[in-house]
Structures are given as C-alpha cells and as structure tokens.
Length: 280
Image: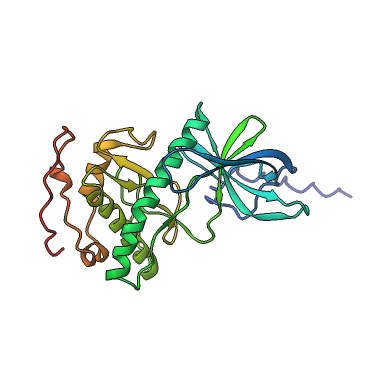
C-alpha cells in the first residue's frame, strides 16, 4: 500500500507595506509617576515679566508629546492636589531651543499683545455683530521647572482644534461647515483689524485654538524679530494681505482694505492710510 504523498507547502504570504498610521491615535501614552516641581506664576496684562509667586507643586505628565512644533513639544499634564487627586488637564510646552526662559519671555509678550488687541476688537464686534463670538487669548504666565527643564504651562482647551493662519501669512481655509466658517471669518477679521489698529505696525498671526479661544499667537511686525522668534516681519505681513479676502466680518466692521501687493516697505516713514474698502 502506498503512503499518501505529503500536502504541498503553504506559500508564505507576500510582505505588504505597513499601513500609514492616522495623525492622532486614540490611545495615549502612560503618564510618568507624579514628580515634585516648582511653578513660577507671572503677572497678567503686562508686557514685563513680573513674578507674582513661586510654589512647590506635584505634577504628572505623559512621557510622549501629543504635538510638536518648530520650537516646542506639547505634553498633557496634571497638577496633583494635596488630597492626591488630579486637577484639570493642562498643556505643558517644552522649549526645544537652547534658551527656554527667553522663549517663555517672548511667548509672554506675544500673548499679552494679542490679548490687548482683542479688547478693542471685541468691543467693535459687539457693536456691529453681537451674534458673533468674541475672541480670547490664553496668556502665557506660568512657567514650570521640572528636573532642570522648563515648560510653559497653560489651560487645556477642550474641543476641535483648528489653525486659521500661520506666521508666514498662509491662510488655512478649508471646506468647513457654517459654524467653523464663522470662526474663520472672525479670525481673519481680527488679523486684518490688528494691522489697522496698530497704525500699520503689526498684527496677530498664527491664530489657532478651539472656536475663538486661541493660544500661541504670534505678533508679526514691520521689524522682523522685534517680537521674537515667530516674528516674520514685513514678508509675513505682506504675504497675509496678499492672500486675505475680506470676510463678512471685515465688511460689517468696515475695516479698510489693505493691498498686500503695495504694502509700503518699512523705511521709517509712516505709510498712508489705505483707501476705504470697496464692496468685496
């Protein structure tokens, strides 16, 4: 009797490239153990860095940043109370360049200037478009010292994060729904308003956040680097106004049109006011 022949070998599956991972995965890295740190709190609503208090704190922070930019990495963090319970989620931003304290000082100045511009803009918005949301900027006033490393600590904004423009004047318009389009229109009008209100000296770009609550603004001025590492100067201003299209908010607030193609170059001579914005 002949024995049955063995079955043919099963071919190995062809190797396929790994699928691309999504930009944000739902799982989060494990937080580190709670650690002792020192928190330095600075005065709000002032250009100068004035420390109000320094206090010992206990902080818990994730090992891996959830976002990274050109000059900082952002980590989720929690301050631990005396009862051992976590407080609300915070965002700890670790500066990746050499002088972290200088980066914090520049962020403090930028957030102050943006918040100062928000006040007259909101007054104008309430007068002409009371149904639109006003803008708010988180001020950079808390510096966390943890094992010889420095982090800017700020409130975590809950909701869908959107970047509306950047320091190079690029406008991040997307096919949004009605509510997000309204948020975009407010952000664009705010950048337009800032340039006019400052007598054509600077405005706020890099507008990003949740709704009209923003963080990490950049003041972009006619003198590059005047406001620090994110100030792209005349080129940033010109690029923004070359791409800016007056939104319904610009029109309702009667903001004068700024033509980026003929934006006067900084020469120490005060530029003439642009003509009244024609119907867009």
